[in-house]
Length: 634
Image (cartoon, rainbow, N blue to C red; front, top):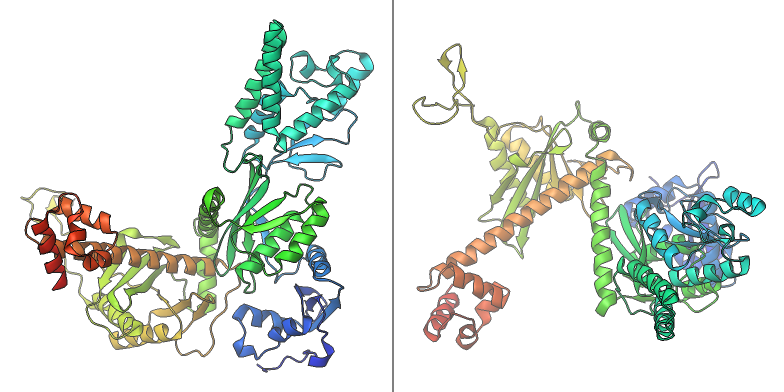
C-alpha cells in the first residue's frame, strides 16, 4: 500500500480559512463530511503517513478517491453547512444515529382555529408545539387526562370538531367532559385560545405561577362565600399538583435545560437526553450512535447537539453536557439563532446538575450494554457472528467454543488471569476459570503461563469417576448395572482462543499452543484501543466492519473476561488483607470489617498511627498498637 494518497492536494492549494470538506469515492458518493476552523491544518491530518493514522481513518481515506472543500465566512456557517450536508448525503463514515424506538410526544396544534392536544409520533405537524418525548404512550395519555382537568382544551378529532360546529351539537368527548373546546358549546374560540396559551405555558415550565394564581383565586372565592367557584379552583389545583407529582423537582424551579448523558466505547455510544422544564424532567429520549472513524468526546458531543437541535423548535436556555466541545462558542451562536435568545452550553460539575448527569450517564451506560448484547442474544445474529469469524480468521469451521483470556494486575503485583467460555455465541458461566500467577515478568509471560496450564488439561485422559453405590447421591443405571459416570472436566477443546491484547500477547499465545502441541486450535487477539483483531505472524491486523456481528461477539468476550478477572482480583485482595489482620490476637471478623470500612483502604490502614486506629469503635489502645506493629512488619 502506497504511503501517499494519489489524490492528496498540494499543501498550498488548501486554504487556511474555516470551511467544510467532503471525501468522495470513485463513483462520487460522499463518504465523510467534516468542518474545520483551519482547513489546511485539519486536512493535513488525514494525509499524514498511513501507518500513523487510526485504522478506521486509514480505511476511510484509502476508500476515498478525492477530497473537496467549501470555504465559509465564519465558524458558525461551517457548523450549519456541515449539518446540512450530513443530512443530505448521509455519509457512511460519519456517526450514525439510531433511535431505540419511536417515542410518543404530546403536541398542541397551535395552527388550528381551535388548537387541540394529541398524542403523536409525527414530529412534522405544521405549527404544532411538542412536549416530551415520553417513555410510554400511556404516560402521555395520563398526563393529558390530568391536564385537561386544569386546562379544559380541545381533544376531539378535526372531523368531530367540524361536525359539532356545523350542527351546534357538542362533540362526543365534549358530552362526557373530555373536550373543552368551542365544540363543547361552553367557551368561545377566543376563551379557548387563552386556555391553550395557559396549557402551553404550564407545560413549558410555568407551573409555579399557575399554582400561586389558582391558590389565590380559591382563597378569594372562599372568602366571598362563592364555594362553587372555590371548589372548581380546588379541583384544578389538585389536577396541577397531580401532574407535578409525576415528576420530581430535580433542578431549581426556574430552570429550563436539556441534559445529555453519554456512554461510549471505540465503536458505539449511547445518549440519554433529559428534557427539563421548570426544574422537572418532562421527557427522556435515548439515542444509539455507531462510530466509524475515531472522534474525541468533545466532537461526539458537538455532533449529538447538531442532531438534537438541527430541526428542533424547542431550544432551552441552558444545555448541560459531560464534555465541552472545542467549538462551544460557535455552537452557542448557532443555537441562539434558532432560539432567538441566548443559549448556554455548560458542563454539569457539582450539585443537583452533577447528580442528574450521573443518573443520565448511568442510564446511557446501561443502554450501551443492552445495545451491544442484543445482537449476541439473537440466534440469527449469533450464527452470523460465528460465520463472520470463520471467514475473517480463515478457519475451516465455525468456532462453536471460544475461550477468552485476560490478565489483570496492580502495578505488577497480585497478578491474576481469567478464562471465560462462550459456546454457540452464549456464555457458559459454569465453565469460567480464574488463575493466580505467583511469579511473572510481564503480561506476555503471564499469558504464556496461563495458556500452558489450561492446555495441559487437554492431554489428560478422561478417567471415569468410580461411584460407590452405598453412598448417597444419584447413581446412573443401565439394565440393572451400575455404570461409571464421567465428571465434568476442564478438557473440552476450544476451536478458538481469544486473548485480550495486541500482537505481543497473540505471539505469546501462539507459542504456548506450539509448545503444548495443539496448533490445531486457532488463536487471535483483540486490541482495545483500536478494536483491531490480530493473528499470529501477521504484520497488520484484521479490521472487522463496525456493523460486524463478529466484532460485537469478540468485544463481549473481551469485556466479560476483563470483568471476571477484576472480580477475582478484588476477592483475592479482600481475602489477603483479612487473613493478615486475622493473625492479630483479639481481632475478629466483625472488628476487621469495621476497620476496613473506617479507613476505606489497606494503604490508609497501614499508614495510620496507633492513635488513629484507636479512634475506631471497639479498638482499644493495646489492640491498636498490636495492629500497627503487625502491619508494619508485613
